[in-house]
Each structure stands twice: as structure tokens, then as C-alpha cells.
Length: 382
Image (cartoon, rainbow, N blue to C red; front, side, top):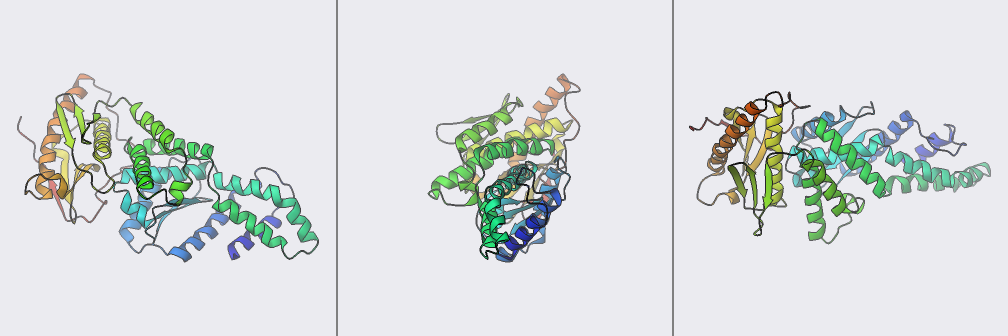
């Protein structure tokens, strides 16, 4: 309430008598976001893990550097298991701990953060506040002039309603479009947005459409997922994904293929396959492919497979059909990927000059979990 009353004072003493668009300036917006963020942090607390906080800030800043708005963006993790994220005015973006656990890759988190940056880019929340303020301004000012003690409460309620209101479909589509652009410029997986939306929709259906902000305020999921898929497919990646009738998903490129059979959590075979396909595309776009640059990183109960700093997959115990460890299974994956590397190298040699320089900011570094051991894969004999 103190925050909302402070908003009232700010508006009343900042030229608010003109009820028109752009009533809220950039510095006012930043101050609004700062105060809203303080309230969120006081309510939930920040998650006390420096590595996780640094990871979210790294991903967010890698996207924000391509934002058209040159304001100081801040990215933090709130200590709650809800699956949600939100953008306060002025560049204050929060993700909930539950969302970080749910989105296992940097690419998925980048899709969420890029979307939230999109809302700030387009000043969606600010415009909501301006509209509601304009609608109630005359009656509020009349109440203030007459000494009505309820006038401040009316203005505070108006601001509160605007801050809590859901975004319109147009706002969501605009934020999606901004997020796609930012993720691509920053060098994240082109399938990241599709996988993120699809996983959220799966959770929504499984939990009976819970009233989490990410679900209730993000309408028309089918159309948005279709748009996200079209954005990825417009790149004409040579790596294809085929979803089989049994639910397994195959990533293929010429004579090479790799099949995902297992769903782990909400990571279906299709989603895992698409992220691998997108990662292979990133590798080839980065420059000359080197089959010796694959590595594995052991976590608590899984092993990640990387090419330099680009994560291709997380190998879980469920992926092994024998008694091998996750490290052994991931090593076999790298052997298969080295065969793909030979195909990619031949394609690059046949089309010199098409492989671009390194894309954007480095992403997907080995910070997606607790690092225990890194193995460098040796080249496989032809």
C-alpha cells in the first residue's frame, strides 16, 4: 500500500492534470519498477544461491544488450516454487525458483526472459497504468480538491489494478516477437521459444489450468506455439526432427540420426530432439566444425553433452537401456555426434563462406547444474 500511495504522490506532483498518453516518463517508470521490485523481494525473498542468480543475470544481460531501450535491466530469482516470471516497469525482471527448475536449459530461460524484456520494450504495463489513470483521473482529482479522504485510495486501487492486470493478446504477440528477435541476436537455440511454450502448455493441462501468471496471462497457446515453430523453421536448418507414433523423436541430417525415447519431467522426446537440432544448427553457423570440441559435464544424476559452450542434450539415467552410467551413455552420444560433425564439415567445405562468425553472446555455458567432471571427447576413427 505504501508503494501505491507513493505512486499517487508521484503522479499528482508530476503534471498529471493532462490525462493523455505518455503521462509516465522513463525515470518515473524506473522508480515505479524499483518500488514494485522491492515489494516482491520483501514478500518472497531472493533465492539464496549466488550461482543461480548469476546465471539468470548472465542470460538476461546477454539479451538486454540488444534491447532498443537503453535502461539498466535487472534480473533476479525469487524464492518461491511457483512457475512464473514477471516484468516490472523500468527493466526489473523476476523469475521464480520454480520456473528455473522447470526450464532445464539456458535456451528455455532465455525465451522467458526475452519475452519479459519484450513487455518492457513496448512499455505494456506502463500503458495499462496510463489508460486506467486517465479513465479515473477526473473523479480522483475532483475528490482530492474536495478533500475526500477516499480519493487517494481510488488512485491507489487504480494503479494496483493496472499492475495486476493481464496483458492483452496483442501485447503477448508483441512480446513474443521481441523475444524471438532478442534470442536470435544473442545466439540462443532457435527452438527455445517453441519448447518453452509447449512445456508450459503441457503443465497447464496437467494441473487443470492453474492460475499462475505465466498461464492465465498468456492466451491462445496453440497460435503462439505455431508462430514460434514457424520462426525456427524459417531458418531452413539441415537438421530435421521427426516425431514417431510411439512418441520417440529423431534428429537426422543426411545419413546421421539420433533418437530420443524418454520423457524426463516435462522434457518430451520431441522437445529434447528440437533443442539438439537447434544446437547443431548453432554449431555449424558458428564456424568450422571440429569433432574434437565435444565435451561432457557430469551433474548430480545426469550428464550434459556440449560442443564448446553450446549444450546439445542432458543424458539422464532413463536414457540408458543397459547398466551404463550417465557419463558412459553421454560418451556414446558424443561419438555419434562426431559422425554428424563429419557431415557438417563436408557441407561447410562445399559451401565456403556461408558459415558465419560466432553468434552474439556466448550462451549455454556449463552452468546449468553442479559441475563435477568434464570429459573431452576424443575423435572417432573414420
